[in-house]
Amino acid sequence: MEKHALLVYAKEDIEKNRWFIDRLTSLFKERGVDLLLKTPEDFREVAEPAFVINRSRDYLVSVYFEEKGIRSFNNSGTVRIGNDKFEEYRLFKELDLPVMETVCGDTPIDGIPFSFPVIVKERAGHGGSGVFKAEDPEELSQILEGKAPSGFIIQEMCDEPGIDVRLYILGGKIVSAIKRTSEEDFRSNFSLGGSAEATEADEDMEAFARAVCGALAPDYIGLDLIRHRGGWTVNEIEDAAGARMLYANTDIDIALGFVCLICEKTFQNAENGIE
Image (tube, rainbow, N blue to C red; front, side, top):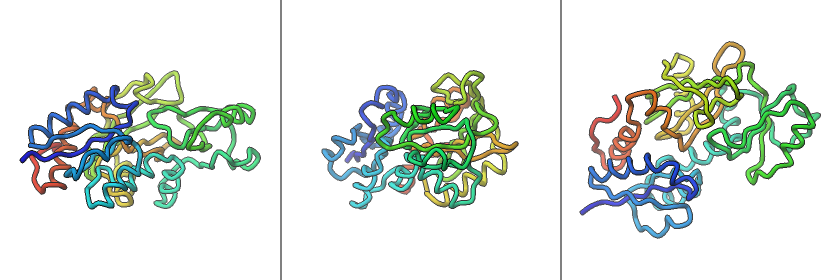
């Protein structure tokens, strides 16, 4: 009998992720698993899935299934922390990783322990959205008056803006590193027009990945690093990491690797995925 499982996306993210959704669905179909696409509003309609792939950024979806003994990819802790930039900062500090100094958005301006310009981020922002640069206290106040249901963080600005590396991490291992650069924006996101190329992960990057994976036990995430004071500094975790850069710059099929990982963890069998 064909097994069924769930893939959960926020409604507004489905169309822009259609290729990845279709790729996962096809790969699971080949393995006898019917992958049903749902949103956080209707996922409860499906009874007893074999597993759930939660790419909705809503950690309560993962909690719901974990309480029923059903495996969630990623787990609820990864989804929760990976979609809250202040919680990410706290985790990096706890792990003694290099990170830009950060305070909550409600910190009085005269209490900010670093100088302008500063970076302001929506705590639940992703893909470069909800990220701003404030040159002075007046501009900072204007940004903080905007709407952000999750609130903001204020962050020290790195000294080499427009450069970062995304580590693609699957099953606790780095499968690729993609360097992103932008000549025109302090944000280097590929989705915002930055350029991207494959690079080699160095020893520091490997150590950062081990530390984060040791704390969260994620299945598939991105870990973004930025340049500061001549070295790499951890910046953000991407729980529902996009794969466009990876497919554009490498021969790695991350969807296949993810499917094999899920099958191995769920059914104790899998075909070879990423070497």
